[in-house]
Image (tube, rainbow, N blue to C red; front, side, top):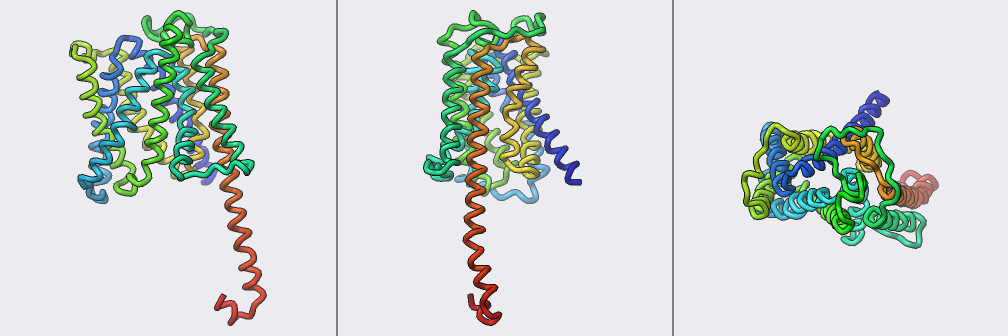
Length: 361
Protein backbone atom coordinates (compact mmCIF):
# COMPACT_ATOMS: atom_id res chain seq x y z
CA UNK A 1 0.00 0.00 0.00
CA UNK A 2 2.87 2.33 0.89
CA UNK A 3 4.56 1.66 -2.47
CA UNK A 4 1.34 2.40 -4.36
CA UNK A 5 0.88 5.65 -2.42
CA UNK A 6 4.47 6.72 -3.16
CA UNK A 7 4.02 5.93 -6.86
CA UNK A 8 0.85 8.06 -6.93
CA UNK A 9 2.72 10.95 -5.27
CA UNK A 10 5.56 10.78 -7.81
CA UNK A 11 3.04 10.55 -10.64
CA UNK A 12 1.17 13.55 -9.24
CA UNK A 13 4.23 15.83 -9.08
CA UNK A 14 5.27 14.89 -12.62
CA UNK A 15 1.75 15.69 -13.86
CA UNK A 16 1.70 18.98 -11.90
CA UNK A 17 5.01 20.06 -13.48
CA UNK A 18 3.79 19.13 -16.97
CA UNK A 19 0.67 21.25 -16.32
CA UNK A 20 2.81 24.25 -15.33
CA UNK A 21 5.13 23.73 -18.30
CA UNK A 22 2.10 23.77 -20.58
CA UNK A 23 1.00 27.03 -18.96
CA UNK A 24 4.37 28.71 -19.62
CA UNK A 25 4.35 27.64 -23.28
CA UNK A 26 0.64 28.30 -23.99
CA UNK A 27 0.72 31.70 -22.27
CA UNK A 28 3.72 32.65 -24.38
CA UNK A 29 1.95 31.56 -27.59
CA UNK A 30 -1.20 33.55 -26.69
CA UNK A 31 0.84 36.69 -25.98
CA UNK A 32 2.84 36.26 -29.20
CA UNK A 33 -0.44 35.90 -31.12
CA UNK A 34 -1.28 39.42 -29.97
CA UNK A 35 -3.37 38.91 -26.83
CA UNK A 36 -3.14 41.78 -24.37
CA UNK A 37 -1.38 40.55 -21.17
CA UNK A 38 -3.76 42.54 -18.92
CA UNK A 39 -6.83 41.07 -20.62
CA UNK A 40 -5.28 37.60 -20.48
CA UNK A 41 -4.84 37.85 -16.68
CA UNK A 42 -8.48 38.94 -16.29
CA UNK A 43 -9.79 36.04 -18.37
CA UNK A 44 -7.56 33.55 -16.56
CA UNK A 45 -8.69 34.60 -13.07
CA UNK A 46 -12.35 34.79 -14.13
CA UNK A 47 -12.23 31.27 -15.62
CA UNK A 48 -10.63 29.95 -12.44
CA UNK A 49 -13.25 31.73 -10.28
CA UNK A 50 -16.09 30.19 -12.32
CA UNK A 51 -14.67 26.74 -11.58
CA UNK A 52 -13.79 27.33 -7.91
CA UNK A 53 -16.98 29.08 -6.74
CA UNK A 54 -19.37 26.15 -7.38
CA UNK A 55 -16.75 23.65 -6.15
CA UNK A 56 -16.35 25.60 -2.90
CA UNK A 57 -20.13 25.89 -2.49
CA UNK A 58 -20.54 22.11 -2.80
CA UNK A 59 -17.55 21.09 -0.67
CA UNK A 60 -17.48 23.84 1.98
CA UNK A 61 -21.07 24.99 2.56
CA UNK A 62 -21.60 22.71 5.58
CA UNK A 63 -18.26 23.27 7.30
CA UNK A 64 -17.06 26.70 6.10
CA UNK A 65 -16.32 29.32 8.72
CA UNK A 66 -18.22 32.62 8.32
CA UNK A 67 -16.27 35.22 6.34
CA UNK A 68 -16.31 38.53 8.20
CA UNK A 69 -15.77 41.95 6.61
CA UNK A 70 -12.29 42.07 8.17
CA UNK A 71 -11.31 38.70 6.65
CA UNK A 72 -12.76 39.74 3.27
CA UNK A 73 -10.69 42.96 3.37
CA UNK A 74 -7.54 40.94 4.12
CA UNK A 75 -8.31 38.62 1.22
CA UNK A 76 -8.77 41.57 -1.12
CA UNK A 77 -5.40 43.11 -0.17
CA UNK A 78 -3.51 39.82 -0.42
CA UNK A 79 -5.16 39.12 -3.78
CA UNK A 80 -4.14 42.58 -5.02
CA UNK A 81 -0.38 42.05 -4.68
CA UNK A 82 -0.11 38.23 -4.55
CA UNK A 83 -2.48 37.25 -7.36
CA UNK A 84 -3.36 40.25 -9.55
CA UNK A 85 -0.04 42.15 -9.50
CA UNK A 86 1.87 38.87 -9.58
CA UNK A 87 -0.05 37.66 -12.66
CA UNK A 88 0.20 40.98 -14.49
CA UNK A 89 3.96 41.30 -13.91
CA UNK A 90 4.54 37.68 -14.95
CA UNK A 91 2.64 38.04 -18.24
CA UNK A 92 4.17 41.43 -19.03
CA UNK A 93 7.61 39.93 -18.45
CA UNK A 94 6.78 36.84 -20.52
CA UNK A 95 5.78 39.18 -23.34
CA UNK A 96 9.45 40.27 -23.59
CA UNK A 97 11.20 36.99 -22.74
CA UNK A 98 10.80 33.23 -23.30
CA UNK A 99 8.81 30.34 -21.88
CA UNK A 100 12.11 28.70 -20.89
CA UNK A 101 13.26 31.77 -18.95
CA UNK A 102 9.93 32.04 -17.11
CA UNK A 103 10.09 28.37 -16.07
CA UNK A 104 13.73 28.81 -14.97
CA UNK A 105 12.81 31.78 -12.79
CA UNK A 106 10.04 29.66 -11.26
CA UNK A 107 12.78 28.01 -9.15
CA UNK A 108 13.45 31.37 -7.45
CA UNK A 109 10.08 31.38 -5.71
CA UNK A 110 10.81 28.98 -2.79
CA UNK A 111 14.15 30.71 -2.18
CA UNK A 112 12.49 34.14 -2.14
CA UNK A 113 9.87 32.73 0.23
CA UNK A 114 12.64 31.55 2.56
CA UNK A 115 14.47 34.94 2.45
CA UNK A 116 11.27 36.82 3.27
CA UNK A 117 10.49 34.34 6.08
CA UNK A 118 13.95 35.06 7.56
CA UNK A 119 13.37 38.83 7.33
CA UNK A 120 9.97 38.45 9.04
CA UNK A 121 11.45 36.21 11.75
CA UNK A 122 9.62 33.04 10.64
CA UNK A 123 12.83 31.21 9.63
CA UNK A 124 16.38 31.26 10.99
CA UNK A 125 19.72 31.86 9.26
CA UNK A 126 22.53 30.73 11.61
CA UNK A 127 25.69 31.78 9.76
CA UNK A 128 27.98 30.07 12.29
CA UNK A 129 26.43 26.72 11.41
CA UNK A 130 27.08 24.67 8.26
CA UNK A 131 23.39 24.63 7.33
CA UNK A 132 23.32 28.45 7.54
CA UNK A 133 26.23 28.73 5.09
CA UNK A 134 24.57 26.24 2.72
CA UNK A 135 21.41 28.38 2.71
CA UNK A 136 23.48 31.52 1.96
CA UNK A 137 25.20 29.67 -0.90
CA UNK A 138 21.76 28.77 -2.27
CA UNK A 139 20.65 32.41 -2.18
CA UNK A 140 23.86 33.48 -3.98
CA UNK A 141 23.32 30.78 -6.62
CA UNK A 142 19.85 32.17 -7.28
CA UNK A 143 21.12 35.76 -7.59
CA UNK A 144 23.82 34.54 -9.99
CA UNK A 145 21.22 32.58 -11.97
CA UNK A 146 18.94 35.59 -12.44
CA UNK A 147 21.94 37.75 -13.43
CA UNK A 148 23.16 35.22 -16.03
CA UNK A 149 19.64 34.81 -17.42
CA UNK A 150 19.28 38.58 -17.84
CA UNK A 151 22.71 39.53 -19.22
CA UNK A 152 24.26 36.46 -20.90
CA UNK A 153 22.95 34.67 -23.99
CA UNK A 154 25.81 32.60 -25.41
CA UNK A 155 25.52 30.07 -28.25
CA UNK A 156 22.09 28.83 -29.34
CA UNK A 157 21.13 25.14 -29.37
CA UNK A 158 18.62 24.76 -32.18
CA UNK A 159 15.62 22.45 -32.03
CA UNK A 160 15.30 19.35 -34.19
CA UNK A 161 11.86 20.67 -35.12
CA UNK A 162 12.22 23.42 -37.75
CA UNK A 163 8.49 23.72 -38.48
CA UNK A 164 6.64 25.94 -36.05
CA UNK A 165 3.12 24.83 -35.12
CA UNK A 166 2.12 28.48 -34.60
CA UNK A 167 3.32 30.85 -37.30
CA UNK A 168 3.50 33.98 -35.16
CA UNK A 169 4.06 32.25 -31.83
CA UNK A 170 7.16 31.13 -30.08
CA UNK A 171 9.11 34.33 -30.49
CA UNK A 172 10.83 33.83 -27.24
CA UNK A 173 13.52 36.41 -26.86
CA UNK A 174 16.87 34.88 -26.12
CA UNK A 175 15.52 31.38 -26.44
CA UNK A 176 14.69 31.72 -30.10
CA UNK A 177 16.99 34.37 -31.39
CA UNK A 178 18.60 37.59 -30.26
CA UNK A 179 16.84 39.57 -32.99
CA UNK A 180 13.35 38.95 -31.56
CA UNK A 181 13.63 41.53 -28.81
CA UNK A 182 16.23 44.11 -27.91
CA UNK A 183 18.57 43.38 -25.02
CA UNK A 184 16.82 46.07 -22.95
CA UNK A 185 13.43 44.43 -23.52
CA UNK A 186 14.80 41.01 -22.54
CA UNK A 187 16.37 42.36 -19.32
CA UNK A 188 13.15 44.23 -18.55
CA UNK A 189 11.14 41.02 -19.04
CA UNK A 190 13.44 39.07 -16.68
CA UNK A 191 13.18 41.88 -14.11
CA UNK A 192 9.36 41.86 -14.23
CA UNK A 193 9.15 38.07 -13.87
CA UNK A 194 11.64 38.15 -10.98
CA UNK A 195 9.52 40.82 -9.28
CA UNK A 196 6.47 38.61 -9.86
CA UNK A 197 8.21 35.73 -8.07
CA UNK A 198 9.15 38.03 -5.17
CA UNK A 199 5.49 39.02 -4.74
CA UNK A 200 4.47 35.36 -4.96
CA UNK A 201 7.02 34.54 -2.24
CA UNK A 202 5.66 37.29 0.01
CA UNK A 203 2.12 36.05 -0.62
CA UNK A 204 3.14 32.51 0.35
CA UNK A 205 4.77 33.64 3.60
CA UNK A 206 1.71 35.61 4.69
CA UNK A 207 -0.89 32.92 3.88
CA UNK A 208 -0.67 31.01 7.19
CA UNK A 209 -2.95 33.24 9.32
CA UNK A 210 -5.46 33.58 6.47
CA UNK A 211 -5.83 29.81 6.05
CA UNK A 212 -6.50 29.54 9.80
CA UNK A 213 -9.30 32.13 9.41
CA UNK A 214 -11.06 30.14 6.66
CA UNK A 215 -9.82 27.05 4.79
CA UNK A 216 -7.44 26.39 1.90
CA UNK A 217 -10.21 26.07 -0.67
CA UNK A 218 -12.25 29.01 0.62
CA UNK A 219 -9.12 31.15 0.85
CA UNK A 220 -8.19 30.37 -2.76
CA UNK A 221 -11.72 30.95 -4.08
CA UNK A 222 -12.13 34.30 -2.37
CA UNK A 223 -8.73 35.58 -3.46
CA UNK A 224 -9.17 34.43 -7.06
CA UNK A 225 -12.63 36.06 -7.14
CA UNK A 226 -11.17 39.33 -5.79
CA UNK A 227 -8.31 39.08 -8.30
CA UNK A 228 -10.82 38.70 -11.15
CA UNK A 229 -12.47 42.02 -10.22
CA UNK A 230 -9.10 43.72 -9.74
CA UNK A 231 -7.73 42.38 -13.04
CA UNK A 232 -10.86 43.65 -14.82
CA UNK A 233 -10.26 47.19 -13.50
CA UNK A 234 -6.58 47.04 -14.56
CA UNK A 235 -7.43 45.62 -18.00
CA UNK A 236 -10.09 48.28 -18.67
CA UNK A 237 -7.61 51.02 -17.74
CA UNK A 238 -4.85 49.50 -19.91
CA UNK A 239 -6.86 48.40 -22.95
CA UNK A 240 -9.81 50.61 -24.00
CA UNK A 241 -10.18 48.98 -27.42
CA UNK A 242 -12.71 46.24 -26.62
CA UNK A 243 -12.27 44.63 -30.02
CA UNK A 244 -9.00 43.26 -28.58
CA UNK A 245 -10.94 41.60 -25.78
CA UNK A 246 -12.70 39.21 -28.15
CA UNK A 247 -11.89 35.53 -27.81
CA UNK A 248 -12.32 33.39 -30.91
CA UNK A 249 -11.88 29.65 -31.24
CA UNK A 250 -8.11 29.96 -31.24
CA UNK A 251 -5.02 29.40 -29.09
CA UNK A 252 -5.85 32.40 -26.87
CA UNK A 253 -9.13 30.77 -25.78
CA UNK A 254 -7.35 27.45 -25.19
CA UNK A 255 -4.63 29.23 -23.14
CA UNK A 256 -7.25 30.99 -20.99
CA UNK A 257 -9.22 27.79 -20.28
CA UNK A 258 -6.04 25.78 -19.70
CA UNK A 259 -4.52 28.34 -17.30
CA UNK A 260 -7.76 28.92 -15.42
CA UNK A 261 -9.14 25.38 -15.19
CA UNK A 262 -6.16 23.01 -15.45
CA UNK A 263 -3.48 25.06 -13.66
CA UNK A 264 -5.39 27.18 -11.15
CA UNK A 265 -8.17 24.73 -10.25
CA UNK A 266 -7.08 21.13 -10.90
CA UNK A 267 -3.36 21.49 -10.15
CA UNK A 268 -4.26 23.33 -6.91
CA UNK A 269 -6.13 20.27 -5.66
CA UNK A 270 -3.30 17.97 -6.76
CA UNK A 271 -0.72 20.12 -4.94
CA UNK A 272 -2.76 20.07 -1.72
CA UNK A 273 -3.06 16.26 -2.02
CA UNK A 274 0.70 15.88 -2.62
CA UNK A 275 1.59 18.11 0.35
CA UNK A 276 -0.79 16.11 2.58
CA UNK A 277 0.79 12.81 1.46
CA UNK A 278 4.50 13.68 1.22
CA UNK A 279 4.96 17.22 2.61
CA UNK A 280 5.79 20.64 1.06
CA UNK A 281 9.53 19.90 0.58
CA UNK A 282 8.70 16.92 -1.66
CA UNK A 283 6.61 19.21 -3.86
CA UNK A 284 9.27 21.96 -3.92
CA UNK A 285 11.97 19.44 -4.89
CA UNK A 286 10.06 18.71 -8.09
CA UNK A 287 10.03 22.34 -9.29
CA UNK A 288 13.08 21.99 -11.61
CA UNK A 289 11.06 19.51 -13.67
CA UNK A 290 8.97 22.47 -14.88
CA UNK A 291 11.98 23.95 -16.69
CA UNK A 292 12.98 20.61 -18.21
CA UNK A 293 9.47 19.91 -19.50
CA UNK A 294 9.12 23.51 -20.76
CA UNK A 295 12.33 23.21 -22.82
CA UNK A 296 11.07 19.94 -24.32
CA UNK A 297 7.55 21.24 -25.07
CA UNK A 298 8.68 24.61 -26.49
CA UNK A 299 11.31 22.86 -28.60
CA UNK A 300 8.93 20.25 -30.02
CA UNK A 301 5.86 22.47 -30.49
CA UNK A 302 7.39 25.88 -31.20
CA UNK A 303 10.76 24.87 -32.61
CA UNK A 304 12.46 27.18 -30.10
CA UNK A 305 16.21 27.21 -29.72
CA UNK A 306 17.67 27.31 -26.22
CA UNK A 307 20.60 29.56 -25.33
CA UNK A 308 23.59 28.43 -23.30
CA UNK A 309 22.85 31.34 -20.94
CA UNK A 310 19.38 29.95 -20.19
CA UNK A 311 20.82 26.49 -19.46
CA UNK A 312 23.55 27.86 -17.16
CA UNK A 313 21.03 30.12 -15.41
CA UNK A 314 18.66 27.17 -14.95
CA UNK A 315 21.42 25.05 -13.38
CA UNK A 316 22.34 27.88 -11.00
CA UNK A 317 18.70 28.49 -10.03
CA UNK A 318 18.04 24.78 -9.48
CA UNK A 319 21.29 24.53 -7.46
CA UNK A 320 20.17 27.48 -5.34
CA UNK A 321 16.79 25.88 -4.68
CA UNK A 322 18.31 22.55 -3.62
CA UNK A 323 20.93 24.24 -1.43
CA UNK A 324 18.26 26.11 0.53
CA UNK A 325 16.16 22.93 0.89
CA UNK A 326 19.27 20.96 1.91
CA UNK A 327 20.27 23.55 4.52
CA UNK A 328 16.72 23.64 5.90
CA UNK A 329 16.66 19.84 6.14
CA UNK A 330 20.02 19.83 8.00
CA UNK A 331 18.75 22.47 10.43
CA UNK A 332 15.61 20.43 11.18
CA UNK A 333 17.73 17.32 11.85
CA UNK A 334 20.00 19.34 14.19
CA UNK A 335 16.96 20.62 16.09
CA UNK A 336 15.58 17.08 16.41
CA UNK A 337 18.94 15.82 17.71
CA UNK A 338 19.03 18.61 20.30
CA UNK A 339 15.52 17.73 21.48
CA UNK A 340 16.49 14.06 21.74
CA UNK A 341 19.70 14.92 23.62
CA UNK A 342 17.81 17.18 26.02
CA UNK A 343 15.25 14.45 26.77
CA UNK A 344 17.80 11.69 27.37
CA UNK A 345 19.13 12.86 30.81
CA UNK A 346 15.55 13.11 32.10
CA UNK A 347 14.83 9.54 31.03
CA UNK A 348 18.08 8.33 32.64
CA UNK A 349 17.22 10.13 35.87
CA UNK A 350 13.75 8.57 35.92
CA UNK A 351 15.30 5.14 35.45
CA UNK A 352 17.64 5.64 38.43
CA UNK A 353 15.18 6.88 41.09
CA UNK A 354 12.58 4.72 42.91
CA UNK A 355 9.08 4.49 41.42
CA UNK A 356 7.51 6.72 44.07
CA UNK A 357 10.19 9.37 43.58
CA UNK A 358 9.97 9.13 39.79
CA UNK A 359 6.31 10.11 40.02
CA UNK A 360 7.39 13.45 41.50
CA UNK A 361 10.05 14.22 38.85
